[in-house]
Length: 88
Image (cartoon, rainbow, N blue to C red; front, side, top):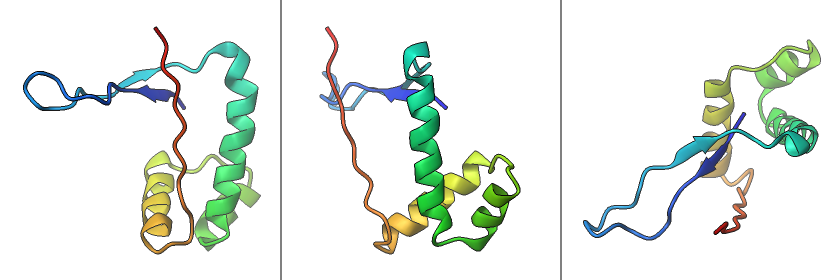
């Protein structure tokens, strides 16, 4: 898993810059693992196949997790929250 970094303001051409993937700092890896587990458990509440994968202690396919997240968001089952901070 990684963090996406992007620049929100559009460039001079009026187009936003593409996001850039960065590695999660080592001191945050444990927290990321815990939060990712919480996210997967929440998504598994609505997807029996994902639940089965987690119960078998397997790592779910990231594309399936993203698909579940998209479906669950579109149907109002989950509400994504985005937090950000600006580094100078």
